[in-house]
Length: 222
Image 1 (cartoon, rainbow, N blue to C red):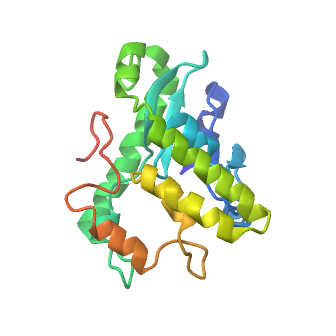
Image 2: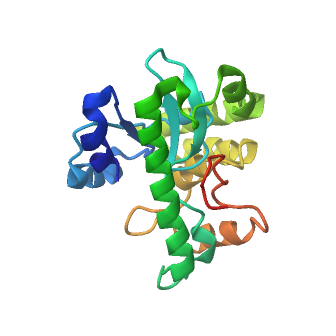
């Protein structure tokens, strides 16, 4: 998705920077190398981007214009909340849900095209006041959670997992909304993903809440 969009728009003053939030760089590297992107791809082992922009899940995106102004705060990037309807064994998604995810991707890509073409006049761009109103400002608990996470990662790299675990536990407690912190501090399967029974139990515990919040964008499926 992103490579095709970059190829289409790169000559129109458009750039993409993707950031994988993986504490283990080798877990992300194969996916990046397989995609072979022409745009900048980074691996954020300490989740500094998540802390700076208060990102709680992936994929999320921030639109930043050429002056450095955020014109769309962090939001779900080109996908739809399909996780709740995914079969836990086959991992298949019902056709109607898959169709909404495909629609969300098209709407999001077209919105980016409109932004690149019309700039600040795009209907998908928020004014500074509107963007600020939509920003979720991290509180002290969230900031402390990220500090605990980073210190825990440092200790893990020093070969001290027993010292790191209480910090990870505290990070999860302080910032329970963060799936990025949770998935990097929970037990992983053979594929390196925190996608086992604990993950599904956490999904079930959401109740009526969504795994991905709906994107505030014209034409986006609800």
